[in-house]
Length: 596
Image (cartoon, rainbow, N blue to C red):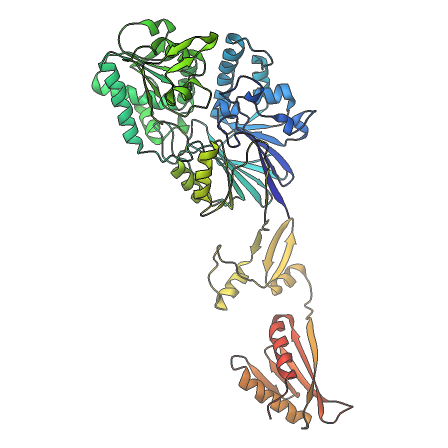
């Protein structure tokens, strides 16, 4: 039996470094190629040696698909294609293709230029990698080769994020990042066909979380920022450049306008400015409210939010600063945090998930003394708030997605093991569910279905015979002739098949001999058989014909005397294949003899 194999090279019972290897119908596909925020050594990137110990990955992979631009999903792409070696197609949506190189270059600058790391990809490698990218349009079926096809659906996670339906023959897999079932400030809600894949692979970052209503969270966020500003404090909001940053900027911009507040709001220059540029460029990928507003004014043209200069961090008085990156593991957000951490008037609001090992994760777990580089310690006195504006789906959103797609099996990745176990238990009430660790392979046997077209005449004939209406959930038997033409199958009536193929009809009949003890004449025996069958088979048409035979439907019964025994009769039964069950029943019945 055919099977689909799924192996996480990263994000197996872990958050970050998403990289899933799928083998389906003889094809090998890599889903995402991310890096891990919590490591600075070889563990930062997926273990590509699982695919091949030596040689280029091109020989082993048919294609690579990137779901969205977050670094934990695309951060290892230039390393994989240019340093390990891959020349095949890389698929991602247009917004992801535009934004990906900006984030990769920023990541490279922090890692190489500021930290001085070697064995890392260069700016030229990023450019060479992006030349291999083939952009995807939503709902467009792309034929990777003669057998492998992919189709992207809107995921609503961040700008350009996509769920992907992968199909080889009748086998299929859907891969999704944590979709947003409900629209964010800047992006719409996710949607996918009821495609019933063999496996649905989903992120499970917030596997045990069922978040409160989005409006409550927004109100709480604005209240906390406002209170901190009123008492003269500074508010640091660490964000990744795209997605959440735009959502929170829109919230504060409208709140400042409504409340006529004067405290300055800043965002990290460069990266977020470029991000906003791409949000404006790909405005059609944002939600309906923003698209409508765009006619009057661009919601990404901020009046109250200005570009940040690092000298502003020492300015007196209240301010709000959006700074990258989002987990306080490096960069400008960490520098500002160090400066503001000692003042209890100040506040840091963590608006999303933080990977273990990052400063963000430590302070959210209540750590108040932090060991920094150079063995110095930092006392954390500012207020620490966690408010999930994450674009990842919560447990409820994941369950809604499962019911939308109706997969045969579910596979969870990109989540903490203990939390994934909880969600797995919930899912297993309705579906098979798996959660492999990194390097562990899940092999699922599939039952391939062969699509067959049925002629309208055959369906109409079934209806006239009083059969039930066609129901995709209830299998039923159809009698007809299967014709194969140009790699497609069609079920038609035997009459139509003969006509289409220009053939004459040949009837195949089954014959059976039954020995019967009866002292009467042949004609009397035949009449007794007719009377007996009339009394037993009340729902069937039974005829005693002048040619000395009895007919039951298509079954013909003849009687002749035995040459060896005058009291013995030989019954010959003949029937067509349609009445095989009835013919077998009659032969068994007559073997028991006739009533006296």
